[in-house]
Image (cartoon, rainbow, N blue to C red):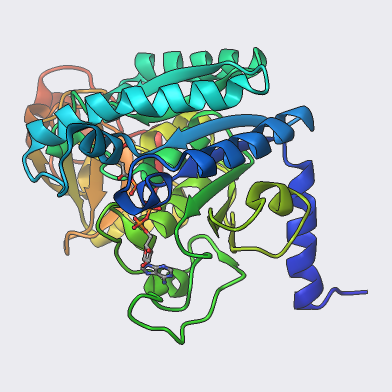
Length: 382
Ligand SMILES: Nc1ncnc2c1ncn2[C@@H]1O[C@H](COP(=O)(O)OP(=O)(O)O)[C@@H](O)[C@H]1O
Ligand SMILES: N[C@@H](CCC(=O)OP(=O)(O)O)C(=O)O
């Protein structure tokens, strides 16, 4: 007998108990009691629940914001600075408080924690990405809880994740998590921002890449950065490796325990696409690309519908500075993103073979060349 939608929603919650690997992200607004120092009581409560999840057999990776907000408190700053070096100084001071607090809280359960600070570069560079992955896996196998944050001290505006929702999703891809839980200051995703629309309704469930869901999400508060926009986008990124995302209120009593018990709290965003291979997730996870290839209509169609390689004949322009083996964005002639991939040619070489048929590549380049600008194994349609 077919289940009605209410039963299906309940069933999706009930099966969470069987999902082994959870990445749990806690945002600034929640962690810092809206800016009044670290919310230690809240932290202990989340840690108690995470320790309980571990005892029940789940792997836990924690992605925690709060370093800038805690640093501001420690330095006696009442407003968030604008300048990058001041933000970085605050993050460096605050990160100490953050990890001390987690180490103490997990220590009550005889659990060790490990500090893992990542930058965008760490996940873009294949070797560093693989190293980060094996370190996180090793820590989980040891029963240690990795506490991940962005390495704010060394990033610049151009290369920062900016919000930890995105970092949480990329970590979920990295460790092939089953669930990404985003704890925040609202009960979940509402049909509109409840700060400005008090009549908005809580959404219990949706599909991670449904544009209607994305349209409900607005920007963030003073301390947090991304708001719901980055949380919904994170759900769609996490879905690439098959993870479901829960956006839920961190102030709800025993929230993690109750989610694990199947209670209908927050918003569950289901992974609505086939998981892609780990190597392709890594390509898709590149937030900054080295350059753009502009494709004609035929090439766009071949990529989207035929799952084909990108041939030079369909490329009308190459922009940016890239070398062979780097990740580039493929766009249509209106500038919309179509795919990302590892390119077989540098920008200089690519310029020589724009609109060139396979038979003309050797002559144009002066060497025996690969047929594809990007091979389909190295290409992810977005
Ligand atoms: N549709 C929506 N539903 C719920 N909250 C929303 C929505 N649109 C925007 N928001 C805002 O997003 C904020 C949470 O994001 P953010 O401030 O970045 O917090 P965090 O530090 O937890 O990441 C909420 O306080 C809320 O006002
Ligand atoms: N990495 C920084 C900023 C991260 C941040 O603000 O993220 P979020 O609260 O999730 O929007 C920190 O720890 O303060």
